[in-house]
Length: 348
Image 1: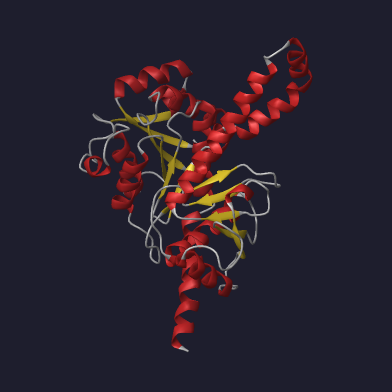
Image 2: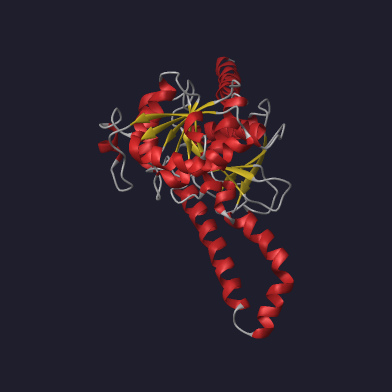
C-alpha cells in the first residue's frame, strides 16, 4: 500500500450516521488509493456499512467506540467522554501521532472543545478559528474565517485569523499573495468597531507578510470575486455563512416553483436546464464541504452534519490536501515572521 495521509474518521458523527460517511470514503478511495483510513464508531454498525462497498472493509481499519456525541450535547459534557466516543478517539488519534488529520460531521461545539483541549493551540495563536471555502464569481472560491468558533474577538485575534487564512488560501487556492479583507458594515476606514479598526491598522503595516490587505468588505460583496480571504469574528461569520446558504436554497426553490407554474414555464425550464444545473452545482454546499480548525497543533476538519457521500468525500479531500501541503508548518512560519517584526518594532 502506498504511503499517504492517514485520516481518522468519526464514523458516528453526522445526521445519517455511518451510511453517508462510509459511502464518502469509498468514493475517495476509488480516486486516491494512497489514503489510509481509521474509522471510529460502533464496530457492528460500521462493518455492516462497509459490506456494501466491496473490498473497502479490507482497506480500512475499524476501532470500536462504545459511545458517540449527540448533536445537542454541551461541549463541557462531551469533553468528559473524549476517551469513549467516536469523536474523541478520532481526535486523540491525531494527538498520539496515529493519524495526520481527523474528520467529523458531529457537534461543532464539542469538536472545537475536544480538539482544542487535546491538540492545544499553536505558539502565537490565542484562539483557533473555523475556516471554509465559499463560492464566488471569481476564478476560485474564497476562504472565510472565523465561522463560529469564537463569538467575540479582539484585534490580535483578527490579525492571527488573517495570517492563518492567507496560509490556507495559498495552500488550497494556489494564490501566492492572497487579497485579505475584514468583514464590516461599510468600506470606509472610519466605520466599524474599535477592534476592526485596530486590526486594519495592524494589517496595513504588515506588508512583509505573504498577503495583501485590501481594507473592509460588506456582506453583499462576499461572492463578487474581488477577495481571497474574508476575516471576521465567529458570531458574524456564522450568521453570514448561514445567510448565504439560506439564500442559495431560497433561489433554487424559487426557480423550481417558477418553472412549474405553467406549460410555458416548463418549456423554459427544458431550454435553461444546462444553466440551472451549473447553478445547482455552484450553490450546493456539498461541493464546498470541509471546514478546517486552523491554529491547532494538528488538523481537524468539520464536515456538514447533513453532507451526502460527495460532501463527505470533499471534506476528506480537504483534510488530505492540508496534510500534503503541511498547512500547520506554513502557518507557524508566517506567525514567527509576524512576531519577529512586532518584536523589532517594539524594541526600536
